[in-house]
Length: 281
Length: 281
DNA sequence: GCGGAGATGGAATAAAAATTCCAATTATTA
DNA sequence: TAATAATTGGAATTTTTATTCCATCTCCGC
Image (cartoon, rainbow over all chains, first blue to last red; front, side):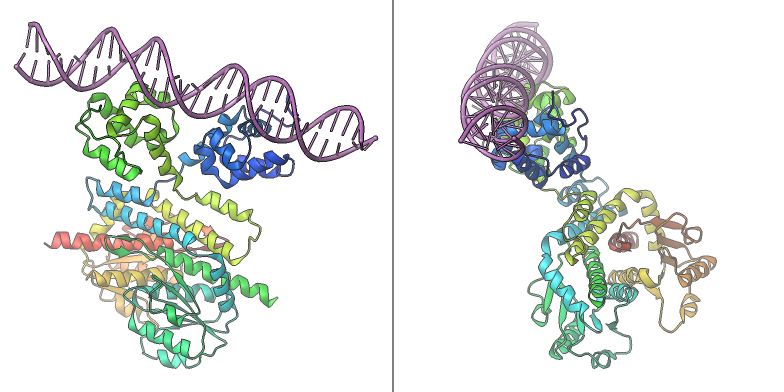
């Protein structure tokens, strides 16, 4: 009645379906593997497509889809597809929708509406980081920073919280760093010790604070490799930097949160710490 | 050939479909209004259901669905449904899924993986703020802070970036504030000026920094209303606070970002600024 | 290279779903 | 209040889609 594989115990949610497929990865015959790979790579397509359209895109016959579903224990393709659809239902709504909902809200300028809006914007910003930052540039920047003796942190005004967070986190990770910012105006003296064996992280968003630019320029001219976090490819930091990252923070009523930037900064710090322990050993 | 409404120019994305429906809200006859309301209230259902199942849930006939679609300009129900499906396709995946994907990733402890993990955790944290914070407590805290002459900001170590961000943003909004933290150890002198007509924002996460607790206690005993941002209902800040908010930051490999907290802080600052301009006028 | 089990493609069939159409009902206007 | 137009319900029909079935092919052990 079946092919030696259990029936009737088909996974009812995407998570376990994924595991089931993965653990049988090598047991599937050629075409079924093809379907398995396609299904995990294109879960949206699986949820919305028809058997015919999916089959075409996966370069198999519709009947193969049915067989695939049955081999995992489902009654048929439709049964399997239901799991993929369920997966999409539980997702939270998007930034645009949320902001729009706020706009149409009766008590739109209540404090609660502001909270909702800021959160939606932050969520959107954080989300977009993953798609905007390539892994290669990130890895390279991490290697540069991990090789440095001391990491200088350059930031003013709105970017300052990020630098202070980096200072704290890097310190915890035992990575020597120096915040170039003080109430005494001794920044130049601090930077005088910088050599090409060090590195710097410069953070500045439009409107770019003049002192930050100046500090970045001094360090750059001293041969110190600079990694920049900024908000545009046309930022004045870019030409001064060895590596640079563009973090686009969405705004709510003209205010931009730092959620995405601070998450990025944390990732950078952790990655540098990791790289250090890996190479030092 | 048609009912006086334009055909052929049907909205191709959810956003404009929504607007189209809303602007015709009152032109629809009874059953079509019913469908319109159901469609906007249950977009997921519209995406996944069959004409029959949706019709049943909206208490209309399947044919009414087709008529509804045609009245907006679509060829038929299927055409309309495509827009609802499209809407779901563009969504990013969830935190769990992303972390799971990372776990199964071949190069799991590469720098890129760290970035992905931190971003996923941040995203999850930001998301959970909206559900965790009620609007009433938020509004009350905002009113308290808006009524204050000076807002004292208490934070140390990991929380310090948030306080410095608050100081910057509140300053921009022309809200008088005082960062209780200095390299000179003159915090007590700073706080000596505080009166019950002022207010304070205290920020501390586990492990709670002793100086922050001490400052919050002093202010609280001086009759200054304290609004706390912390990470647990059992935080030592809670008993010292008039209003308190729990921000749960998800962790990645033991590291917690500040994305959610910083977004919350920004919302708080903006809301206080808004409240000020509203009441001052 | 031969036999056989398993896998595959594709047409045939069955099932499900969307759409159309018409009679019945409900609003609208004179 | 009658006449007419608009709307609606529901069955009939058509279209789309999933599934089944079988002939053919492929791979593996001997």
